[in-house]
Image (tube, rainbow, N blue to C red; front, side, top):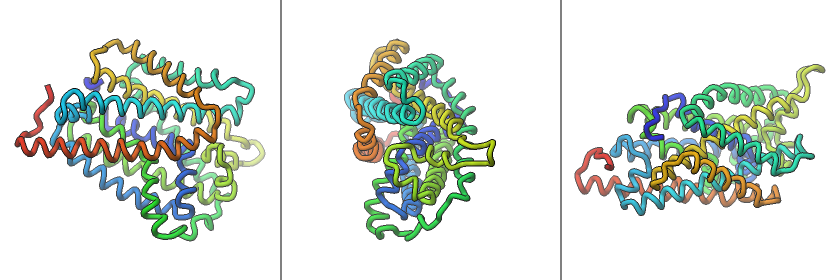
Length: 368
């Protein structure tokens, strides 16, 4: 996969499909429950911090041109640290991909497929993941780029079509429960932007450092904008969006769209689009997991790794039987893992690797 070169648009699309899935699922409701009416202001505040963090990542990666977090881990601590980093990221992608898959499958079952066993619904997604990944990450990125405009259009359409249902009183008071809740405790809402995990593996897959800079900045800005308008939409639909603890907020928003007698209950069409978006996200997560595993091991059998990971995801996704438990994991455990792995551990790897390079006086040497 490191030999695969993605265009800037393809790479940006990979980042955006993750943030879109966070918007489709219940991450937005977690943010609203944490910071209340101040959630829109909180997202803007977090967006500024996230942009500064991404700029910091760009600076740290500048001294390791064309290398990802695994290569840099090997430079810093040898193969042992490279393997540890790889295992952490694989566990992160596989476990939480499984949880998000089960969560979305449960929503599908509640909404339309109540008579279909959950194992069949999950199996449909597993087959989709397996088939798509046989085609490779390049094909996945191209298809993702093709469907992304449709998904974005549908999300924007939902936001605009609900204007008549908005009650902007849900945005007040702007500071919600106070400055501390909005700007300090509210920092935990950064977990919603875990899409930056892709950035740690993009440098070898793009043309050059300039491309990486553009991809990182543009994808981050678009992610913040998309999430901001999503939060504003859900806050404005406060009476019925916030009171539901299980069904996806974006789906609930589609239920209130009506255009006369002949255009009602458009939610079925939108749910199909959300399903495609989830499949695309799952394919991307598995593709990156396979690439990481290949880089930290001597195993080159792509199909063998793919079937193994697909089986693991299927098993993990069927472990939990309670949707409330899944929501708890998504909202709480996932939050801490994102902070520790993406904002903590990985940052320290890059910082210490840069210190080591500075002490050695090296400039952009490659790991061989």
